[in-house]
Image 1 (cartoon, rainbow, N blue to C red):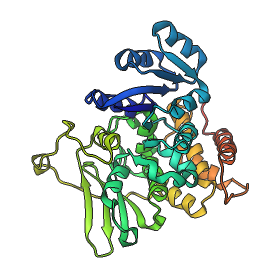
Image 2: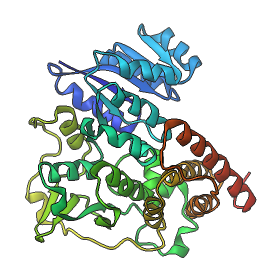
Image 3: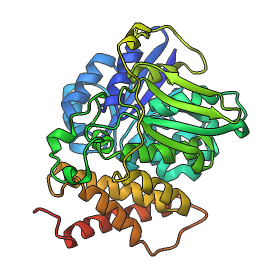
Length: 386
């Protein structure tokens, strides 16, 4: 029996991970779960269905409400997350909390020698140099990075000419820059392929998700960033490609179903049979697999290469300012294209030291600065709607 700790149980990856685990009750167990606590009823429903031994939520009032409904040991705050991941009985941690908040428990799990199925790309974007020390303990869950992980396993990295990460393009990649200014939240949340949480869906619409994945690939696979490319592939059947020096090209093909890479991570290094979106060539007979360059007015991709070139704290600044901008857009306080402006302006106005030797304290300080600055810039530029 493999005991699984799920950080971010009420998110899309959390729900799908539990669905996968439930299909293998004699092998896998939901041992502990953690969530922000914004939706206590979802957490209570998960506890009743999966019977985890321990639960962690950030908010104490939410913890009290949950305790009144179910009999389970509940921890609170960041310390609660740490208690879950340090448990000696935990065999695998699924890191699926969205945003910077996922870095600390992910890093702590790795320091404790746990294997981590990594779905929180922001952890790698922000804490890449810290996480790289434990790279042999990480199994990527993002479909693109899971694909690359499988394609280059046991390959010599010096033989790799280029890796290509595919993007669905979200709902707006065909739109001109002038058309993006009037994008509504409701439209941005209608992803044409994937069903995901609000933040990652908006990131997909701005292609910031792909920018984060370029940075994530840089740290996970230790390749020069000029060897990491991204293209739009609307059908989302090919998740990544690896081009080798001899011009052989390996492509990873699977239906767009996150339960496939989740299952791979849960059972790695073994492969198990499953019934999730079984592939058949008949599925492709009537599909035209298309590839397009990413339009230049989606500035997120430019940001990714810029922060990788500068290194140090700049990936943290990009991530923090984007998290703030996306949240402001969801609150209807800024427009869609303002997300790009806030990220770019925050990056441009940083005048502090660019540390060569990063640690968690420095990253937390820079993250806080970037969040404050992003809000201030939004207000000063008069794009902020009260």
